[in-house]
Image (cartoon, rainbow, N blue to C red; front, top):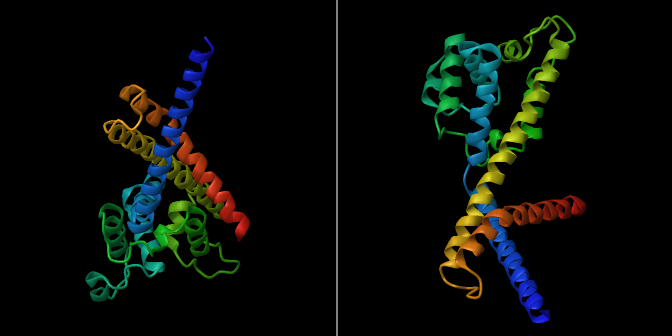
Length: 232
């Protein structure tokens, strides 16, 4: 009986170690992809445009998105921007729709404003739509009209920016967690096929990597993030 419990404990420890290793590998892969490819830029461009369109309609939303891109000087090198002398609504609608739907655009890489963390991106947006204290027009009127849907823009705009911030953080984290979970399971499947832990059923290894690997991956990521914050 004692030997049975010892064997069970050793097996459980092996499964936990296997799942932790798979989760760590999945986290490393995801973090490397995040740094090498502009996935966050594409994700946040799409969701910012979606938020503006859902809030104010397609034409107003794309005009606001185009004005945001223009004010951040992200489209300065595009041919149609150099050729266009008038910054009318049609120009902003075309520019906004292009940046919302295309997967790759000129200045939307890893160094783009859209690739910044959500709190920094929404901070940039907030600076463009600050309600002027005098009679001067706002710097980004299309963007302000898309965000200020009520009669009091001084309160509606900050609330809208906070909502956008929560959406970007929540959805990005959800997608990363789901990706890490499935990737951990995939790593477990590949490793299990090599019979690294021959005393355990391969299916059990894969399930352990799939169910527990994502948890260990995010636990490791949170620990690393906490250490980085302490070092700053």
